[in-house]
Image (cartoon, rainbow, N blue to C red; front, side):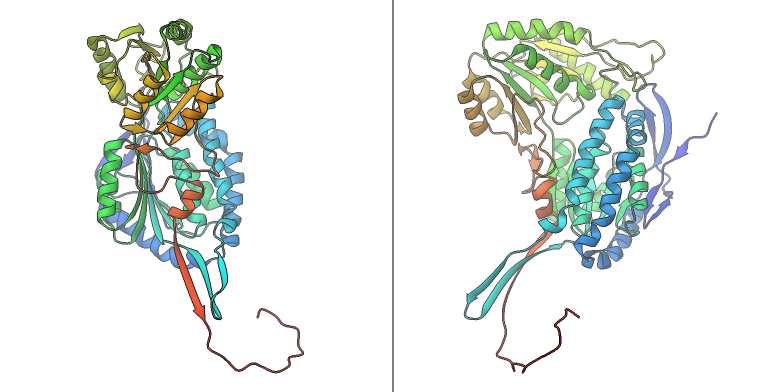
Length: 501
């Protein structure tokens, strides 16, 4: 039997194998086979990474911003050059199709691209003569050492939502990625180092709750970024702020799409298929609830969805025609199947059942077929809980107001969408819906890299959304200086050419 690779940490510009005796297995979700061993770092190893990052932050923080972004340009170039390699690493450990993995990486590269323009965004403001011979100016300065804790569903993209902006702002970074799919992060770290960043600017420490707690408790870490489920986001926010840190903690979602009677039904159905079943539904921006307005609209929607869901092309990432891959773990498969069972027990109409799917040659993989429920109501567990799998629920609404109330009453407020041809309805939806990211005839309204990503209500804890201008504000402190100079001795005539030296 071939020995399995142990995945190392990356500290101070070197890959270092953890000395921890605790390990976890990394699996290929398509085959169910173990592909690697991941040691789970202890508190002392987190502390060592922070010490290295703190030392590196002294010089990196005073490096001119224009000089800081020169390797960022190179990093972007390398990510694009080796995109297929990173995508294959994502697919091998997460299960998503190759095209989906490439799309994930592309959205991460967009943020790297944004970070290349940081010098402009760090410019302060200057006010002359705020008082008699008094000037005032503001400046944004780095925090020092910051950290990111990232989820399994986007192993390349979400870390890139964090560290490129943080590093470009002059901070050094500690990344604790998901234990489920760590390899893509390590490939990106290799390219980061190759791009020419100083050792210790980006450090990767693998681990579980022990490593997370060490990050949250460490006095030298000034800020923590987190993406994951709402219960963990709330925990990270509470513990991190208790120790005096800035925290942005993005949580779960239950994203609704309203389909109005005047919507382009073909467009809406195609949008639902991609947004509901892409990446096996394992996206915080996945549409998991379709809300057709009116019985006729609902009947048309379900009739159009049913054959498409039944005919979803499901397979491993090596299948170029696959539209959907497996879910991340055997436990996730069992949990999702259990929630489908519960939906049937609660009285929802199971239109398409994704349980029991087996693919020849991949019988041990964590595959589920697309599942479609109709006549779901807000009291059902399958509506209230974030299923995080290929399950789409149809909740029928009598009117637009009923549909909007459904969304506004839900505890999550991450993303939402409406499909309509009516501008008045669309404008009212955009203005009044209590959700952070809104799509109008756009199913997954993830903002571009020069805006910022973040939900409302229990989908985001903290004052700042992630990446974009909000990311710059999060990873810097504002300093305002007011100065007046006493009357000095004015020099006489000077005949040499003035210089800055």
